[in-house]
Length: 364
Image 1 (cartoon, helix red, strand yellow):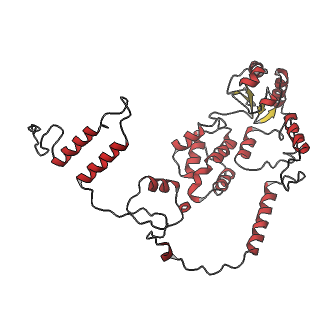
Image 2 (cartoon, rainbow, N blue to C red):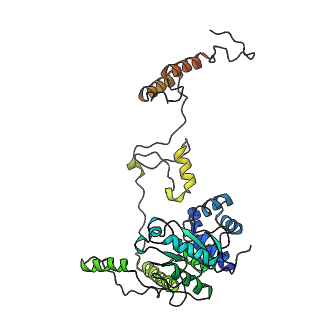
Image 3 (spheres, one colour):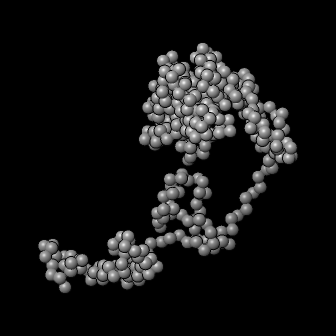
């Protein structure tokens, strides 16, 4: 599949949100983005994400198959999720799910013939105080009963958009995926609908009663659209740039004061995480070291003499005594001493001269 130019432009915008050497962090919103166009993360969507991020398809697929919000087959306009975990199950969640499955003629992760509804049971929807709950494209319907759930899906199939108990106005799964990719819902009044739940109101009342509030918070602050927020951010940035004082001349670096012999290196954040990890795990003579007092650039030196190696091995054995019968063979001090002696004398474990190609050396 060839993705639209709008999707490609949005992909570039998502990637630009992250530092250049951390672009793979954009993978999660990019997967939501491709799902917004196809209704699921297809093989073509995996290939697209791999292409724009410079990853291989296995890396993208490993992430896409880990999270349940990324669908692996075509999904309906409305994803209806019913919680059947312990709390909701006790309160009737399983009965709600069974009623919907029978009414719609579909099972878990199956879609109705008209392509409108995909049904799934969820392990937990994180709303135990509102149970039993179901969500439609992740918007909540609280304290739901079987027949009320049937009424919701029938209204959806008829083209309506029933009001969630809490949250904003319902939208399709593809529209929701655009929002999860990090783009605002530009529908008129999209965030004006819905209302709070009683447990949430109870928390607000307690906060008001005890004078708990966020300093400087104005509850009447309007929620701006993305365009308005971008414009305000650009104006604030321009003001900040104009208010900046002229840069002063940079003083000379007091290199001699530190007593360091380390070469100048870029800040760690200028390196990719892979390079930084490799240098940490396997430093060598060319690996730059932090510029700190007393540090030196490592240099290659002569290999340790056998007796030094023997002393080091003996010290290691002394500080790590065998743990018991479960300890792997070869940790006993006697075996290590014997191996060291054989290495020094140039003989093998059976006393044969390594230069004897016939393998029939005589034990000494």
